Length: 172
Image (tube, rainbow, N blue to C red):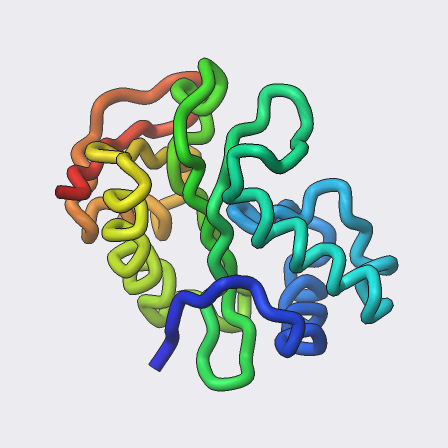
């Protein structure tokens, strides 16, 4: 049964296998922007990456301008990395329009099995504990899988802005 866990170096090989499946496309909620996969093959670099993901939840951690504290979680089943989920602690103007509080992705070989829906359901209490009473989630207008995931978890459609559907989910 899949679980949400804090990023863990023990998933190094499986994480790399999952990253390869994305074939260079962005892993929403993965926190790997700026970390070349080729460099993450090295154990020491991967450990720094995992540490940076874990530390990003701390308000005092350094982060690029415009970025907010974020809790990263991995979707795993046994020893297999299935995907990523990120809970952004508050919204910037950009996140309010485009990104939302929660982003996620599931590796292509693990899609269409309910992993994203289950992970989102498991993440909502964490969002609540972070003080997020209503979580904003967005998805591309044509991403029917993500729309279904959000709606299954109680997402209420508000509007579409610049090709992004915007939903709100009560976490309380």
